[in-house]
Image 1 (cartoon, rainbow, N blue to C red):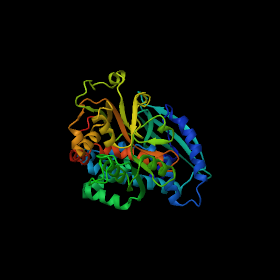
Image 2: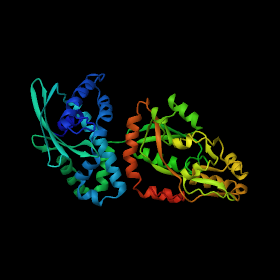
Image 3: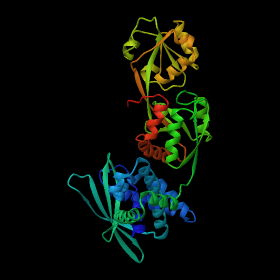
Image 4: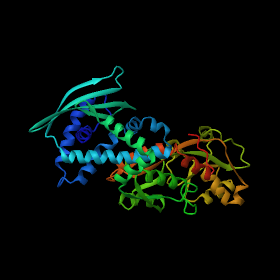
Length: 417
C-alpha cells in the first residue's frame, strides 16, 4: 500500500493554488510527460525526479510530528533534525521505488472535498493501467498559502498511519536513538558537493578566523545538515560573480538583495540581519540618529564598492565609493568625508585594527538601516532551486538550535531580528 500511495504523491506536485484539483490536473500532465523522458528508467533517474518535483511539495515537518507523536515532543532539537533528514530520504527512496515498480498509463480526478474552513482538502483520484484501476485519496492542508501533501490513502488505509504504527513499534522496542540510527543507516546521505565563495568581510567572512567567519560557519552548518559537502573559496565580489556565472563557484556565502541583483540571482531566506550604523569624526556636530535627516543635510557619505545599498543611498548625489575600509576611515578622520554607512560589527572590527584612527572616530549606536543577509545562486544554475529550498528548510531548524546561539556568543554578536 505504501509504495502505491507514494506514486500518487509523486504525481501531485502542487504549487500554491486555491483549488487543488485544478493544479492536480496540470501536475498529472507534467509528471506523465517527465516520466516518459526518463532514459533507461533506472531507479536513480526516478530518485532525481522525486527530488526535483516532489520534495518541496511534501510537508515533511508536519508528517514527522504526526508520525512520532509524543516522541516528537520529547525529542531533542538534534533528534528532531536527524529524523527530518533521514525520514526525508526514506520517503524519497520509497516514492522512487514505487514509481519504478508501478506506473499508471492514464488518470482521472473523481472528487474533491474541503473542511469547513477550507484549510484541508481530500482529492480522490482514479489511476489506470490496461488491466487495473485504483482509487486513492490525497490529503492536503493549506500552509502559508500553499497546498502541501501530508497523507495519502488506498482502500481506506492511511500511508501516514502505516508510518506512525511502524515507528511506534520500533521506538517502543529499542528507543528513539537506535531507531534513528537504523533509518539513517538504511537511507544514507548522498553527498552533494558545493563550492561556496565570498569576499573578505570580517567578522562574517575571514581567512584569519577559526571558522572562517560567522557567515561561512552558518552557511556551512545549514548546508551540511541538508546533506551537502562544502568547500569555501575567498575571492573579490566581482570574481565571485564571474566564477558563479562560469560554473566555478556554486553560491555566494553573503549577499544583500537589490533590484538589479534579483534579475540574475536567486536568494535564500535571510540567515542574518546586518544593522548599518554611521561612522563619523568625533568632533562632528551633526547627529546620525536618522538616515533621511542626515541625507537631507547634504552630508558627504562614504560607501563600500560592490555593496547593494538601498536605492535612496545609491542615488544620493554626494556619495563616494571605496574599495578599502582603511582608506574610508582615513578620509573621515581627516574631515574630508562626513560619515560612512557600514555594518556595525564590520565597522567595529576594522576600527579595532586601526587604533590611531579609532581615537578620532565615533560609531553611532542607532541602527540607520537593516539589510537581510542571504546566500545567492545564479538563476541558470541547474540545482539553484533545490539547494536554496534545502537551505531554507534546514535554516529554520538551525536558527532554533543551541549550536546557533553558541556561535553568536562566540562571535560576541547579538541578533535582535
